Image 1: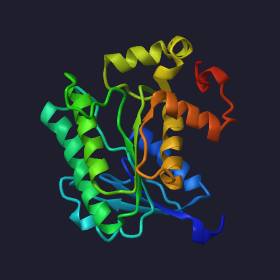
Image 2 (image 1 turned 120 degrees about the vertical axis):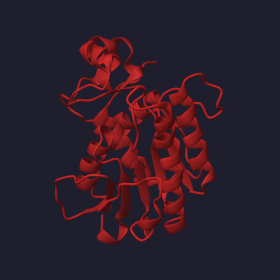
Image 3 (image 1 turned 90 degrees about the horizontal axis):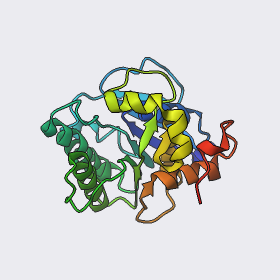
Amino acid sequence: MTPTSQKHLVLVGATGMVGGYALRYALENASVGTVSAIVRRKLGISHAKLQEVLHRDFADCSSLSRVLTGQDAAVFCLGAYTGAVSDTELRRITVDYTIEFARVLHGSSPNTAFSFLSGSGADPTGRSRIAFARYKGEAENALRAAGFPCVYPFRPAYIYPVEPRKEPNFSYRLLRAIYPAFQLLFPNQVIRADDLARAMVDRAVQGTDRGGRIFENRDIRAMIKRIHPSTGRPSALIAETE
């Protein structure tokens, strides 16, 4: 691929689990020419493709308009775990920050293809009793209404961290402990963090579905199997169940 055909990608949430893998993959991806990582704290890495932009207040992204000019693809992984913050803060991070970033990005680069880290059970109707589901659904609706040509909500179920970390709550500690059995019994209810990141970057960079589409956990696994068939991992981890 020639440099002139490479894409300019903006990434939000690069210091998080999925966003960190998305950053690594985008920097290695021959289809990506530059990566603008919008972060609240320094990444501590350097790369010829990387432009690191410190931005602490996602309630106001107006100052990012110049950085966001000329972007072709966006991967948005900013979020918070349920229970880690108050309900008010969860909605602010999940909905308000997404809407504000999308507003400025669309004003600067209206033809950007947008991959959004949503979640399994996201409810665009707003009727779910689960706050996380309502807020993710609300954010999805806002992105579709923002005017981008392609919007891709990714709805993973349990995201396997791959690398050891301090789990955010008991549920995650339990799922990590039983993961080998869980992924064999319920393969379409799990996705590796690095696989999810690959899928989000690939879809945003390709940006071929006008209007976009929703990717449930099963769809993400199928995408990884199709685009990256040689992962060096057991086929049970990536194959779809019939």
